[in-house]
Length: 169
Image (cartoon, rainbow, N blue to C red; front, top):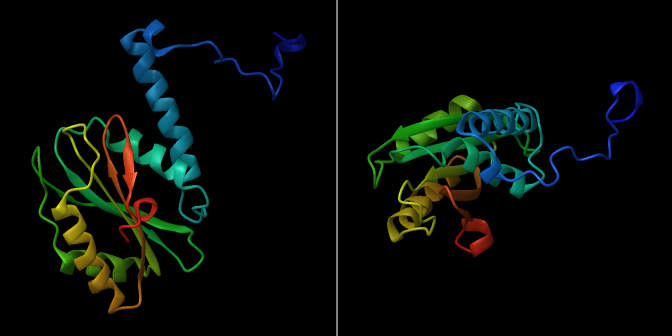
């Protein structure tokens, strides 16, 4: 440790640390710390500049959820976060998504753009045909009120898939 208990900014105190060496309590503490860091990066007013940070944040928030949930990141015209809302909760393998509610919440947020997200508790983040269909319906509904849909993330504990990266938008 450097003199006077000051930690150097280029020092990585976690190098060499492996999840298998941590107790369950330490793992829970580490997840909570990671969420605090990611939430600080996704505060209202912050600009979404890095899709990987958003992906990691959504995985931390949704990976261990036992049921499917669907939500939106509401963004202003400069892609700054206005709000993040979980809009629908479902069962182990599905959630009913209602375009009317998504449009209402988007208008309430005064958003210029949105990013959709939902989880797959099954552990497979591969978008289903139903996921692609509802994304098209939501995108069409929001286009009527001049709101851009930037992406839709499907999240599981092991991975996440971006519709935009897959060319599905």
